[in-house]
Amino acid sequence: QVQLVESGGGLVQPGGSLRLSCTANISTIRFNPMGWYRLVPGKQRELVATARTGGQTNYGDSVKGRFTISRDNAKNTMYLQMNNLQPEDTAVYYCAAKTIKVDFWPDWGQGTQVTVSS
Image (tube, rainbow, N blue to C red):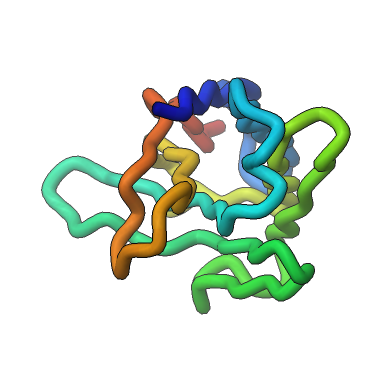
């Protein structure tokens, strides 16, 4: 089973930036869709962004224009560049992948905390 390891979370002031990384332990991840979700206690899991193998990307409405998802297949890594962060972006961010053809995301990382506060 694939292992996904996130990094890059932390504390940042409003208006600041962070870049999250998600590295997989298999090189074939390049052939699989990947994405970022976030979770705030008491709220539903929210789509942040997805990136398919053909380069197609998709963003949640709340992050469009501020966040950018990208992939480096040579490093088995997916990134999330987050700019103009706001307090409402505070959440645990999870990396997800679909290494099997199903209608849900079967593979998840452990999550990384992002806190936006002054």
